[in-house]
Amino acid sequence: MPNIKSVIKDVKRSRQRQLRNQAAKSQIKTFVKKARTVIADTTSDETTVATTVSKTVSVIDKAWKRGIIHKNAANRRKSRLQKRVNAAKATATA
Image (cartoon, rainbow, N blue to C red; front, side, top):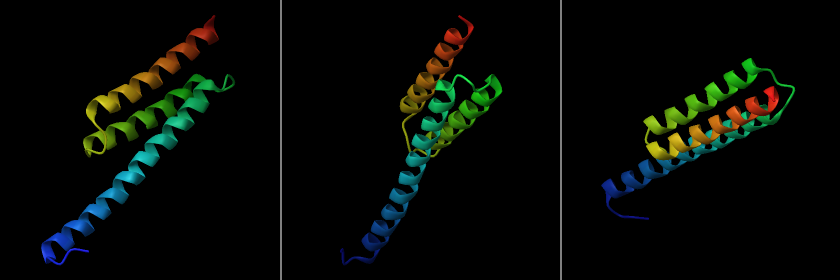
């Protein structure tokens, strides 16, 4: 543990940020997993898929705005999710 008062405060702030970032990343993973299961489920209707994907994109965008994940990482996650949606639509209509 550091002896300097300002460094002690920095360590505390760092730990708080780490917990906050960890929670946000976990939330992203949870929402992406939920969205993928809804997309893969053939019985789910389009509105359910759309709302779930919309919520997931919102969570990803919030994490990007807070600086928790990089902009390109956020766009990559959203793109992969949308590709799954489009592929599911294509197989459902075919």
